[in-house]
Image (cartoon, rainbow, N blue to C red):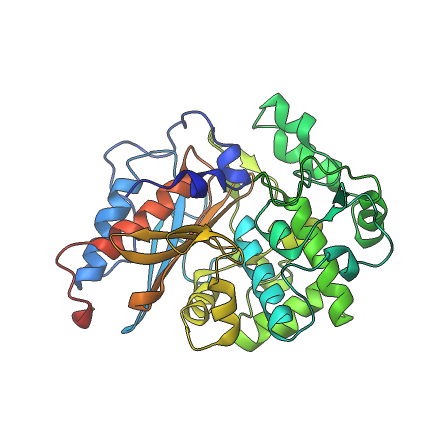
Length: 388
């Protein structure tokens, strides 16, 4: 099923970095290493989709988890590095980039459920200080407009438009890191005073990492804790996501993959201050736990997360999942991309089935290809889900 225009607009940085055709990173037609056991219908459906994915010879490595009522199933393909021979694993750590926004949205949904925030309230009331500039002719930014990229905020703070306008995808990640290297809580709060909204909140949909940094600031104020502490204590630790965080340190660094752009060049990791917008690292082992939680329709926070803030359940935006219908089934999805990595999480709540797919490349269309893989496997004819 083609992506809706609404979903397609919500691409992450990795997709922006990969606008042109990729150069080959493995020989066309060559077999791709995998730990797929090729036993069950699910195994075979994943392998068929992966074979199609690796027809684009730019791709390097791929880790997948499929969460079903029958359990969690892990698959790995390719290599941990370009032209390498080491297969990634469920414990391999990737940047998940803008998939981080779904974690930030989950914390915001919890704050709403606890009465600490309202989706339609003036979000400036959740910020330290006074920000008259964060309103358009008296109409303020809100959690709903921030989380759906309709607050009129710039793409980044500091403004990155000039860097993106160059369309030099080999240097863009380095320039972006240089631009944002000095950003911290204090400099962000100061820079917010100089932001001019680009449109009336609620009117135009324009992708904004800055808006999510603002959400992070609001969460810090209402909970009285730093954002990283909130994320760890209120979401990651309860879910047992021990390999997920805003930094990869100590022995875990041996499991951290390097990422490559469309020309096969090594790309830098994002900075830690990417934070609430696109700062998390994770593994499919950890993402399986996150997907499992997101499929729990009895959890009031999950119920809040799924409520449309714009559009409808068939074509809308939640907190901040993209809502759609695929073959008559409800689907939630969100992708992410950095200079050299891409990710997708795709959920089918009605069937208690979900997928997380992590790749260490930002080749042309990788995010979309990962989403297509999940949709293809989910819809694969002949799969008896009772026999998975």
